[in-house]
Image (cartoon, rainbow, N blue to C red; front, side, top):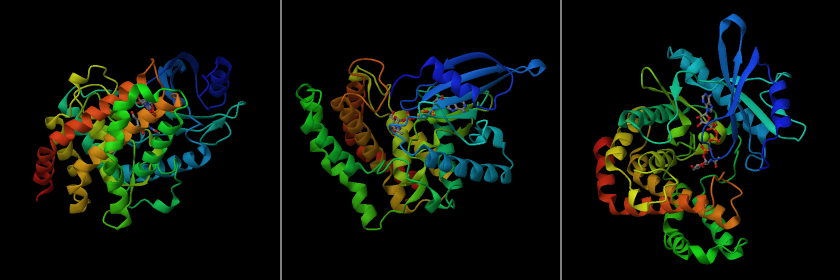
Length: 372
Ligand code: ADP
Ligand code: GN1
Ligand code: MG
């Protein structure tokens, strides 16, 4: 994506219904996909108010109008459920600030799409687990999110990224990237390529189970990393699930697994010293406990049994996606240094290996909390 220009951001700001005088504007968060800004407005005697402004990545989200339809649908549904449960809909779900023409998005003169959300105050987003309790709270919140959306009319949801967690299809894309080798990088990463190829069976597990009708499609989040949840600064509770771009019908094991690959790792997703990277069984256990509590009995025994496999599949898939992007010239995930996507891919493969070594422990934990 081309960088956001000064003119472009000014145009976007001018076209939303913001109140007051713009006091501060800065890039915000550490997402890999959209361009996110925090804007702070001074509203006379009322003090300051902050909002999130995002340029949506149109190379990745090619149907932004449909995507925003999903988000409007899901957030208004969640709003009703939150009110029914006596919660605070201003903090427990995303709240869209409409553009001046009343739409949920604004299209700038370059044809790019922008949206704005109320900023969730007094809450934090973590890139690493600082306290195990935060990880537990995030598990509870993601499990709860999944349960709240259990009766959402799935057929009204657009598929915002086709085959998003179709690991088999991603394996094929990877193979093509190796074959084309457009950047001439394949020779320098033979070991990593070999890792992906030798684990092809991991790419096929869930596709087969789905074909055989052994696992149900549910409305899932599909991007459940720790920094896609807000944790309340005062209560320490996971209050709001954010980044709803990929809410689509999917597999619950993938929602579980994506949280594990990111949050249960003992190092950052882009750590270069692989000796620091492992999958913590303490954090894994905490997440299993919280997630199953949040799902509150809504999962089938088969789904529960497959949670460790979800962790392995999501970690393998994500590593393969990072490596594909490295081979293709880093056009998908934002990078902040040379070889960034390669570093990310390596941590994921290290985690997959570590999970394989700890497989029996992972299964034992899941069986214990799953009650069998
Ligand atoms: P990306 O798809 O690029 O990850 P996100 O929607 O996750 O974009 O937003 C990036 C970051 O911005 C989040 O990780 C979070 O820190 C912050 N953020 C997004 N929406 C809000 C919000 N409504 N309130 C507070 N922070 C937010
Ligand atoms: C992206 O948008 P963000 O940064 O929360 C990606 C996820 C990956 C993740 C890896 C739409 O998540 O699928 O797992 O990076 N989101 C999209 O960190 O591709
Ligand atoms: Mg995000």
